[in-house]
Length: 204
Image (cartoon, helix red, strand yellow):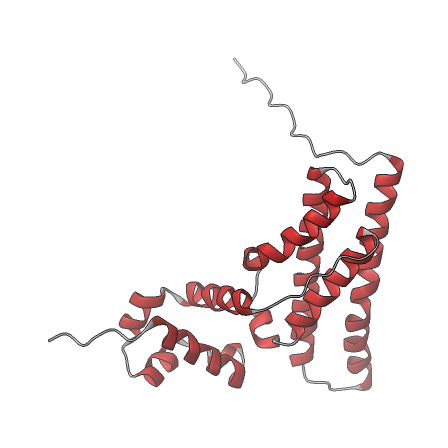
C-alpha cells in the first residue's frame, strides 16, 4: 500500500520555520525533505522546485497578513502612509522579504487596489493612478529588500553602520520625492498615459 502524501500545509509550515530560524541559506530542499522524513522527489512533486516553493511561501504569508488601509484627507498623505505601513510589515519579516521579487506584488494586490481606488476618488486619471501605485509598490519592495540585506551584513566598522542607518532613513524621503513628482505633473497637466511607438512598416 502506497504511503499517503504529507499535507502541503505541513511542508509550508516547516519551510517557514527553517527560514525564520536560519535565514534563506537554511531553506534547502534536502534539509526540508529530511526534516519531514520524505524524499526530495516527493517534496518536488508536492510543492514544485525551489523557486516555486519560495513564491508560494511569500504568497501564503501575505495572504495572511492584515495590512490596515486608511484614507487620509489627500491622496499624497494616504499614499505615504500606505508605503510606510507596507514597508514596516516587510521589515518585520526580513528573511521572507529577502526572498521577494517584484512579481510578488501580486500577493498584496488587494492592498494595492485600495490605494488605486483612493487615487480615483480624488480624480486622478485611471491610467496615471495605476502607474503611480505600481511604481510605489515596486519602490517599497525593492528598497526594503536592500534594507534587510544590509542588516545581514557584518558591521566591520562604524562607517558601515552609518551607511546602513542612512539606507533606513532614506526610504521616507524617497517616497516623498516620488509623490512630489506625481503631484507636480498632475498640477501641470503634463501627465499622460504612455503611448506605444508606432510599428514601422516591414521593408519590401
